Length: 280
Image (cartoon, rainbow, N blue to C red; front, side, top):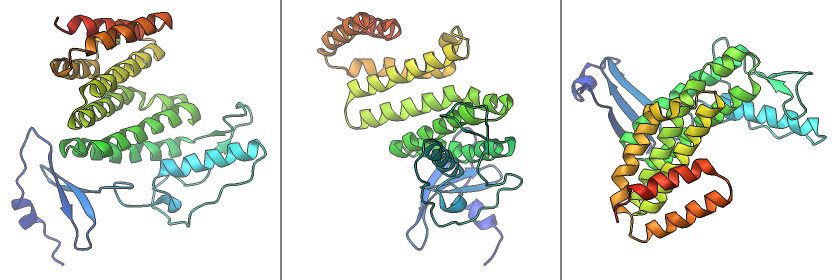
């Protein structure tokens, strides 16, 4: 096999300012995503872990760590151990793939803590999925974008709940807004592809409400309106509003009344703005 990539690169020119992505199929029928970079080509598996590896037989390090935590919690509550898939080892540098250490001072529902090295392994793996869901969005494969963004939100939750050191908990917390926005975009785009504008608006509203909760949780409510992620979703919503049926206004009024009765004033404010933006 000729290792020189010159001919391959010359056959696919890099275009600055855009995500250059394509879907290819290997001789055995396996599909891969390829991204053209200025200095080469990045290839990722379409499903499973983007680099195609299976840490200890699991789809990803995240799944492996989740299985350890679930087993520890089961044993902590008197249940039996879980079955483990056939191991397929993975090279992971200085991040040993061994169960998170016990923390005797932790609450009964959080018996383990992740070491710094294990948190680094999770973050590095999440970057692979980040590159893939950006490429998938360009390919308009919204189902897989939803899958990968939902998965990366699980990483953020795991680091927040189980990281041993505060710096590891905060190391990627700033990415939650972007992942949340991308997931809402994919959900709305999928709904629009199915000609469901109401479902698309609902997905965007849920995404913005999740962003509002995020900024409140970090003590920076004022960043909500300034957030570029929120502005992206608001712009998408404004573009969708003319596609709503006339009857949608009555439905929004009903949802607004219900939100007020339930004292969900954040949702009520979103619905009120939505009502005001619909022309008579």
